[in-house]
Length: 349
Image (tube, rainbow, N blue to C red):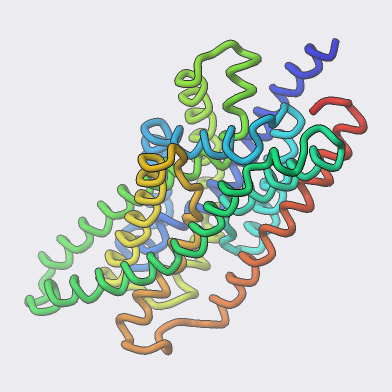
């Protein structure tokens, strides 16, 4: 009976995973699309279509790198109820932020949910505090601090480079068309990087338990979960994605083709490098915040173009940063509370 309950709960958990993926698409579709929309290179609808296609490709091709980190890296013994609790905690917070038009980090949200669930395991005596891999948690948090700085630095350098290359030329319609195509290509790369990194936020916690209950090898499990996450992300982008896109595209700094190109390539490179390089070095891709990278890149080009801090609307930035600071403690508390209640009601880990 307990086994049957766990299998039933697993399918409920997949529904929750779709909910989380939908929230990720709704909140984070802005990360690869904001500069293209803000610079006027594409309409929001066309940008979302491209985002959905290439985020799906990135999820299938490289999403397993971060799935491993969240599925087995932080709390190795996460059960069905634990995975469900972590995803619900992250999804609820991201939904609240999306309805407010705030670009919060889904990576922070799901990581906070996993940590909170792990602490509930400790409080219930299911594991010891040492079973949570704090070294990986610390590495993830460190990546959240480094990635915005890296994104700002990259966007400033790329803007200065593009400025030297393109502003010395006569600005004709042909040059503008070339810049527009390069900017659209940056959306494609950024969406791919996003899919590779962020699909793990929705589905990574289910890798071990899916393999166990459905009898699938890890490779097949990750492919199935990547496809599941891709569907949810696309649905979220089309239904609620416009709210956050409008905030980031128009309310941080004025974007044109040059600033859009620099910001988007900086964002894409930062996310892709944090996904790929740590996996090659330590076996775990970092669930870096694509939101942190995207917003920071836009701040960087605003500073670079104006050659001062006055090129950025700091009131909007401070509001966004406040939502970032609240994300981890809120999702830890939610993850702990949801799992603690669920365990005491259903007696399932």
